[in-house]
Length: 624
Ligand code: AGP
Image (cartoon, rainbow, N blue to C red; front, side, top):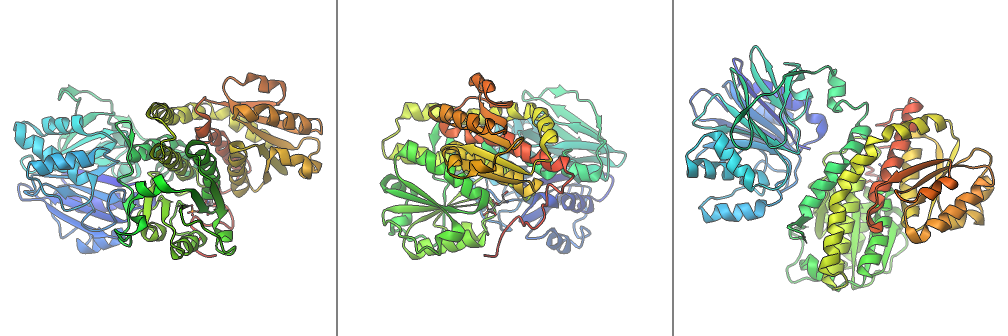
């Protein structure tokens, strides 16, 4: 995720901005920039693609850009490739308004068109440039204050943002606003600071203000003033931060994995926001790579989806598990057969790919060697490839015909959580769009499904409210030697991911089985006290898996049952029941996976293991 910093006061701003950005490096970025104003002079903007050290060198460690008021940004690309042009800060042509932004502006295309009609020109592919020029437009149109101009713009902007903006006519001031993106403001005797995260300003002050959703702030050397959307001044309490620097990086969580588990509602909402607007699925933002020949079959993703007769999904690890859920949802909603393959197997089995098909490669990092090789093989065989990728501009993103980005932001823990969840969302969207294009799904049912999708972030938050129950259970079972996950259909695929989470970070041997397969061999491993986790979220399979649970209980197993609210008779069978909110059965994996992520996490924590960096594993597997 991008990082924002800002400073105004008695000191030189640039070194403070560079230092603050360095503290946010752990969040991941691909370019950086600062803008500093020296008194009444025009502000200077300096940007660099790549490491922050490049920006530091370009500015002579900040000495080349004098001034006591400035803003800075590290960018993690979401709209437009990583480049100096797309890096922040962005400004209006006359440098009247200069700003940086975190988040995603959903209706930026529509706002861009409006501004073009008013003679604005655009140089970058970013939604941020649109936001900054929109503020400039309203500032000039109504000739009001910066607060008025920002408020006018915010009323028109849909999406999430943390914005920091400087106005030419108000030197020595920085204006900020936020919605669903973090931002804090701090004060010391030398001035006022802002950061998208605590570590950015912790070195300078522990006295901070938390700015609320849809609120604005004005920073000057004299302090901070807050405003509501009506432009009225509002009062805020100053808070003292007690975190140390390390826990500040993790947002107060003990590990990145737990932080990322909690970021899932936002990752899902942001990913939905990228592809659904005004109740319609819009795949126009599906990045089309230059390599695509306009006359080729692969020139229009919607035409491809409308015509396809088969889908191949290829991925590794958790991405493969997401693919298994995708298979079930695409087959059920769009009625076309889907084959899911492990990328490491796909290329060696000389796959026979139907001409009328599409290959979907799923990868968080976009660099996994086997997935990349599978992509290349599919292209060689003339099959269009859609990549579902989290890292912008990664190799898989560049080489696929089309890219559907997930908006999970940088994932730091080796065990994936929020990227997996965002992958599920893109697969649901692809399934629904394909079904709509094929005329299998009517608009009314599609609307119902979209409402269910919109409710998933809140459902996850509700599960997280009760996480201490899972923690208690994990503490009790952290000494388990073997754990079995059983389920049928989608529930089996959820079990595979739950089992991977457990084994990769807690080092407990665990296996996921299709529940019906147990009695073909595995049931001989069940003995007194063996932990069996039964996943029972599908109505038509609920009783069948429950009877498999009864079979293992009869052989001494201890039963953890995971199902949806309402299925309370599960307690007649299991020893420990966990419920997730009800949703459409196609989407239930997005909720049911969360207690299993928590279970793996708490077991690892109970055992005192290095949760974020488990032994022998790498975040990105670039070797075969
Ligand atoms: C899961 O927690 C792992 N980190 C791993 O299985 C991962 O999903 C796999 O290596 C694929 O990585 P990718 O999504 O970056 O391609």
